[in-house]
Image (cartoon, rainbow, N blue to C red; front, side, top):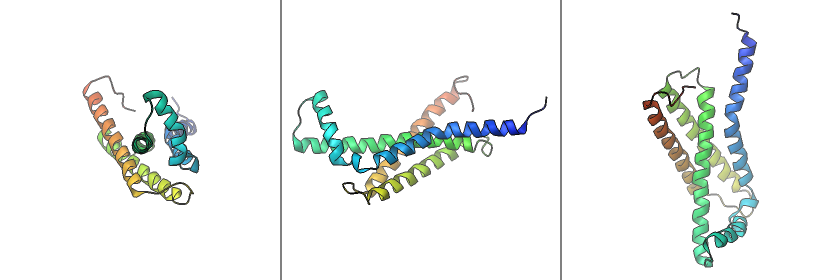
Length: 171
């Protein structure tokens, strides 16, 4: 059987592209949210009516606190999801270099957290130039915590699956 190396390379490139799509979508979402449209004032305009519809009326002072925690939870969860996209991208990109499962997992997780940290830092820097937006190292810390938490959850799930034969197929 003759193997066409150009076809194998083409398939590998297509596979890499497909596995980078979730990370690229995450980056695009972050870029979209890093605009004046998603400032605290603007998100309050549509979140408050939604809150009132779901949970009833809320005082202005209380709403400020709730709104703050909604936004910070969004940072934590959003960047956690972005880090999962980066994890899969790095896992597939470096699979030839890291053939052992544990090495591949740790390396891809580390690169995912680093990529997420760089994106979060860029996002806060970018927001420092936008009217109506603020830039905060605390937000970068929340984003980083979300990325680390997502990787730890992934590690826990993968660890359980690795102990049960047939549940996790090595990719």
